[in-house]
Image (cartoon, rainbow over all chains, first blue to last red; front, side):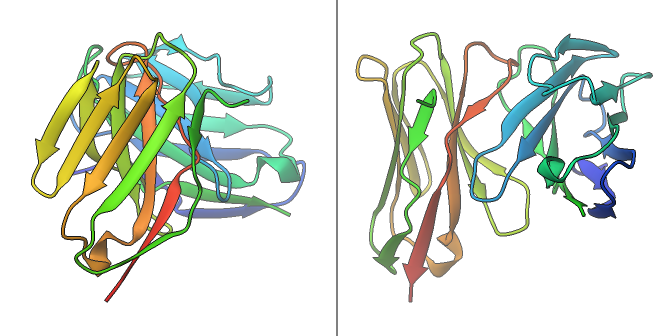
Length: 114
Length: 111
């Protein structure tokens, strides 16, 4: 596609529920990143994939968060037992290769846990 | 203390003025420096990136990096109301590595 696509654009869920957030990177981009942005803050790194493997998952806050990229393209961020503190905009970015400094972001998924 | 510090603003300027934005950082390992623009309820849009120290110009935008002072700047000339947005600086230790962002500066350009 023309840009990074994230679905859904908005998600409201109840505390304790499980959610999945999807990211379709720019076609051909091998590197994919997830970030989380709280209101009034800059994005914070969660996890980085190079191809199918997680090259760096040091930003995942705890074991309730998990992400996969089984075929090296689409990625899903999974959050178990959601908490109100998980409410934020979840951003996905992709870049064309491992050593490319330019990362392009999607519009984000706004997650609200009530 | 955060690794990357950025004044949250808001920074209000009249149309046509020069907008001056900056970030300071503490980690000398950062090598790549980016500026993103983010409109309300949108994802960040890459404006410019610079490797190591020096200046880079692209149209109305000029980015400067001073690694000795751990200080980066973005200048926007002939500012327009459409430049009203939040500007985020970001940096990484190597190309393709995770980005560390500042908190963003909100800019308002008044007609």
